[in-house]
Amino acid sequence: MAIPDFQSIMLPLLKFCADGREHTNREALDALAQEFGLTEDEQKELLPSGQQCVIDNRVAWARAHMKMAEILENTRRGVFRITKRGQEVLKQNPEEINLRFLRKFPEYEAAREKHKENRRQENSSGGEEQETKTPAEQLEEAYQILRENLASEIIAQLKAASPICFEKVVVEVLVKMGYGGSRKDAGQAIGRSGDEGIDGIIKEDRLGLDIIYIQAKKWEDPISRPEIQKFAGALQGKRARKGIFITTSRFCETAKEFAANIDNKIILIDGQQLAQFMIDFGVGVATDAVYELKRLDSDYFTDN
Image 1 (cartoon, one colour):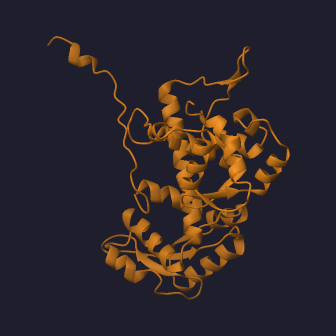
Image 2 (cartoon, rainbow, N blue to C red; image 1 turned 30 degrees about the vertical axis):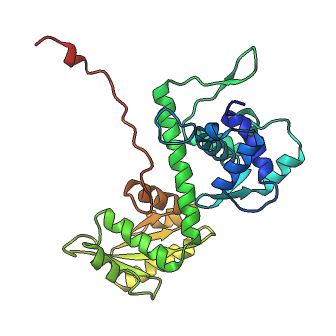
Image 3 (cartoon, one colour; image 1 turned 180 degrees about the horizontal axis):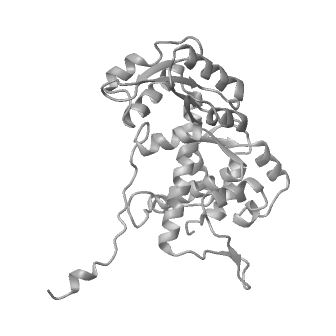
């Protein structure tokens, strides 16, 4: 049979995860290939770019959309499982799961809005959702979805990482952003203090004209105002003017308001922002494929 589209893959993929255990991408691909009776050639069929197998790509898209609806979740890179909501969906015994089905979940709609996706409309014949964007817009939106999906995987990996690994990530990101001088200098600085609410220090520039104090917390719960107050007090005790508070979690609004209204300059970096910085500066990620979007050079066809 033909390789199924990504919406047709959603329900079989969710059923595959019904046991509640963690599963790898490879396990899901093998099970779905058997479910749909795909031949070896069909499993190896590549996208036009030649960078990825068609079935791999479509399973990834199905998983990404269901993750936005919070019926699947990533536990670490390349590993996922069904959520409590996903189990409840299966209990409803739906005939199919598609984009229209997922839109009943507010988290999914919010995620689509975040990615700036236009709402889809139903046609009068088959009721299938139609894409209204140009190919260039679809490419850009696909990039954003892939980026957000990668960021989620990075955050899960950071939360599961050891404190030493998390420290390494923080140092690497700050150095790639231009702080700390050399990687060696930054590595010696961070984690050296470890008292009074301060986890480390790092040079603001290569010459060390100013020092930035760092607090790094690998937390699950949101960071509240008292934690920022404690950090601000530690800065005052050091007569420091600048600090960076980094967490794998997020910051409460009261924490953000406090940081914005004090004399000391405290930059708050939550897990999502840290993941985005890691992507932007190439920390903990690898390039999978590069696409060049070309346009017509009309000047080339003009007589000089």
